[in-house]
Length: 142
Image (cartoon, rainbow, N blue to C red; front, top):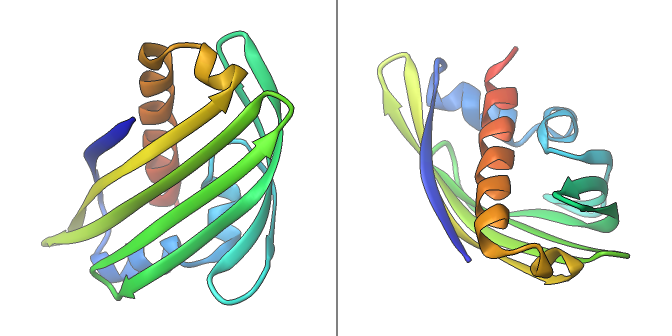
């Protein structure tokens, strides 16, 4: 399933870039992340508790930042597996300065398997967009 959209944050692109690359901010901002530990340069091990409709569970996985072009763009890749299935995400984030604000454009693909995939694409798309919006909203709060 493809996901794309944009979100505006009332901060300069350099500030948004710093927050997107700060492991403490990421740990507090990524929806459902219970634990985020460094696992190499720009790579983290994650424990995620997630609920989507009637399906919930704990997932173990990774979060990886790559193709960095500060403070303009990066790729964010996630992979997690747990009892209810798996979640894989791969997306690009572009930061577009707009004066004292930054427009964030994101586009990527999410793959689900197991019971998560059985929930249905309509619910999955809505939940994914809500999670992305929650993430950027959390990044905006200082």
